[in-house]
Image (cartoon, rainbow, N blue to C red):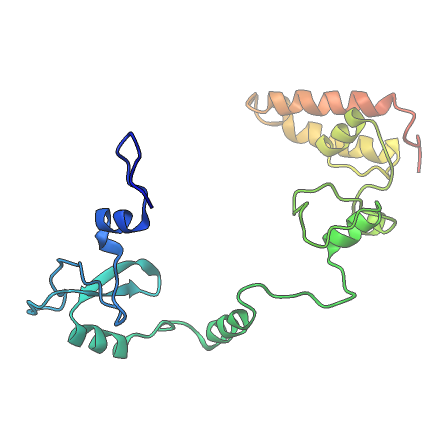
Length: 216
């Protein structure tokens, strides 16, 4: 490559290596440009061979001479302190390069939820924070069973109630919360007045709503 850059820059690979020699490593694994001294106690030889300090710190190294890096490697045990179950799990995980496959024909809970909306997400692009459709079995699982205005849905959350309840049932939950939060029931303590106001607001949304049965 002709070095005719008017600004004097040399972008060739060889020039880059000359400027940054610390990454040059020989076929034996030795860093020939290393100026370190062997980290083994009492050894004054050049430390040209690096070795990780521990299984938990793989990007920080000791630097040894050839003799002492061999000695260190013979004693190295990546699984030191691991249980047999952890060892087996690591072996199984390494067999698939840390990317385990899922059985064919079996969808995860997330995939089944989106499938009900007509969305197929085999690569989990939507993730755990995606909106989920609870489907027909939601009532049995304690989930939403029907659509409601956002204010009424929020009111149910505040009152710790379900959308399948009647107004009478929700009112019982409302009265129970009032007893817990009202200052007169707490020796005059007004620290929960903000929560009390929110509970009163929530009941106001439900009592005049036409979305709920008056009685069971």
